Image (tube, rainbow, N blue to C red; front, side, top):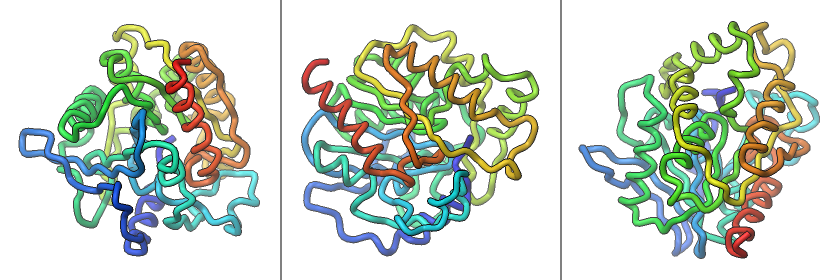
Length: 303
């Protein structure tokens, strides 16, 4: 499942309400070569550094926002993120983690639809290996210390999966939040897999990032094994309502089963976070932050 463009627009609309950054915080475009720059937002201090890889169509701001406790969508058993009104808040995931260690998030090209400091556009759809290359270049250009604890949401999990296999020296720990699991297509029917790949290629004018899912799964299958580092997989208990689904969508049972297989490959567990939908950081930022800082603590302790 991909982040909804209307959510991206809602987060953009509230950006003007953000307070000034703390002295240790940096928010800027970082040149990565070939005339391109990527937006990077870092908060807090300490190590290991946490690096967030957002989902398709999502960007750094989502990790600085949350759904208000009194928002009616919280009472629904379904993931009604399109009806939510998230707002920027100091009790969102990134600033919560920043109380413990330095945490950086970034914008991939084509994710933030408007505003200043947008990452340089690239042709869409694009390959997952391009995203991996961009992360490696960004880490080097911004002089971020490694190894890091990487946090990946949704499509970001495919980026992290390939990154960890091809650049294990950069990876000290991993958190997968509602991931697109590398095992998803193995559990899907042909029509579901075809629909997933087709949907990923769609270019929305409001949020034009588009990806090549089949290629991403193939790249991961051909890569070296995953490294064994402290890790956790997080799944949601809320799912899209029946009226929003089509027969060729993956089911929640399939997604959870694929996440179980990913957790097993990482030597960890798949934890279902209560009260969360696909965008877990917006529903339960404290719970997500706690899982991230738990992996940070394990890395610090050498576990």
